Image 1 (cartoon, helix red, strand yellow):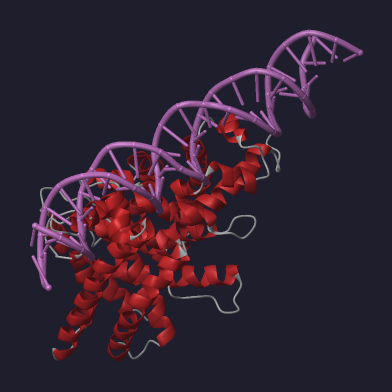
Image 2 (cartoon, rainbow over the protein chains, first blue to last red):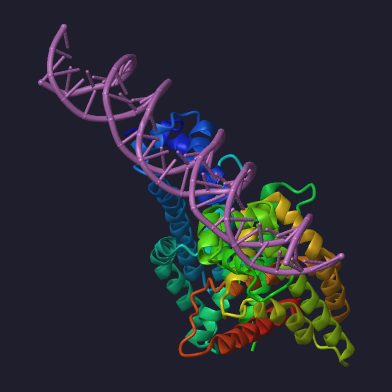
Length: 205
Length: 205
DNA sequence: CTAGAATTCAAACAAACGTTTGACAAGCGA
DNA sequence: TCGCTTGTCAAACGTTTGTTTGAATTCTAG
């Protein structure tokens, strides 16, 4: 019950996050997870009940934080005056990219997220929708007041496009590789490019 | 050896494509594949050698076609004069979206593609890079002559962003759902939005 | 028609999977 | 110290995995 940093439960979560990211939910076995976590095989079922529950926990913990960060950043952007389009976009993009780096500098979580999108698992999809739905709505509303020439349908289209590019970028999929730059520098650069590009796309027409 | 439409080999490829798309490479078993294909379990290893080879074949067949379609579309866009930015973007985007729909109207292949990006499997990644690399270079070069104010590095950044949005859209991940529209109509609409957005993003600055 | 290659099939293989079990140790309030 | 909960552990559970086998069947060239 204690939230120690190196408790069995936490070590399982860390190892699971890393392995799910690189091998997928189906591709990473509990034996790999418990071995990497230096924990007994039965510990997963003891602490999480099942592999499926472990997957949900890994996602939920990170998503809760990402949602909170985005909501807070949006509020900060809205209280500034005048509110800039780039600020609202930054509130959507930067927390997601920040979540890319966990304590050990790994990009495990976002690869999991991208993979989850790709999985098309309906339970996970609706889980994401329930967690993200209202935050996406808040952002779309905020963008709507800044871009009165676009109707709601059009805004959702463009947010879809931006989210796709963001997801792709988060997982470090692209051809652009950091050269000499630190992870943080590269993340900043990615955020800047995304925001700049997205702002131009949103202002179009 | 004969390329019949309903040969054992082809039925396996079709079933594998569909199942890999919805359950992932690790999540879809050969028993599911052969059962859906109405084919004996041993047929996969007989015709493809291994599950891994089957995965590669499924990808290779589709990628060859996508590459050819894109290259041809790019040439068509370049011979038109004056060459419009939207035409080059269309040559990148439309063949990919068209590949979304196979004969039976399924979006299997693109979900596989998106999933493959997410898999981070190095063998598959380099496989994609080898197949896509020169095509991406050709497009970047074409865009470079249309956008002389952007240097090569900047162009790659923006193509990364566009490709991310495209991949996301192809797999039908987003919140936008077709209402009453046919698959083709929805695809056309998606392409139009992507091209319009991407063109604005590319012209920025 | 026939010999031989190509393909299909049911059955079995070892390995790996998620999960359960029961014994054992550690922690803790009474 | 006692009794009870909590956690850990090795071992085994029944399934499912990808792959192999060898016999049966189908196809095809001579």
